[in-house]
Length: 112
Length: 113
Image 1 (cartoon, each protein chain N blue to C red):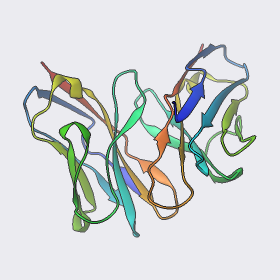
Image 2: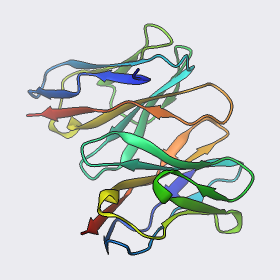
Image 3: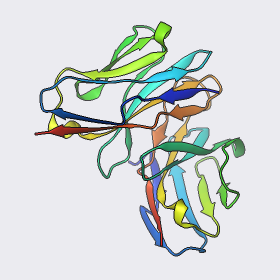
């Protein structure tokens, strides 16, 4: 069965610091990969997605993620975080069985 | 226009009650899902409906029953509510095939007292 691991449960950064959130998955077949964000009190929103092609994908609000197939990883990055990036971030994997699996989430707190 | 909508947004109820949460999508998608997000923010898939057929049923208590009157709706009925059912429930939808992502509803915050 496919699974998703997010290694960091809570990350605390100061504004302008660089961000990298880890995501690893286990699945033997072709996967689609996603990062979702949930701002406080709001619903999930798609940050970016990878289906095929360039393994470095760019999303909204300056986020990007790199798919490294050999490492089964899809880490999320942002060069310089802002206070408004404080949120919960979820990595998700969708295999060809149409089943979407989410990681446990990483809470990001950005201090002004 | 809201693509995936859920009602109610908030639901506070007593233990033992029966309640329903409604979900509607106007995207013409074939598959709809219910997720539960617990107090630790962990998202867990509960059910998936494809053209009115249940195709994923995770190990959730049988007090939870999804009901899909048509392709655009997937309601979640919960019998004999328990304290541990308190969570945020998210509905989502996606096309049957292809590489489309899921579109999530705003969530329903359920609090069982």
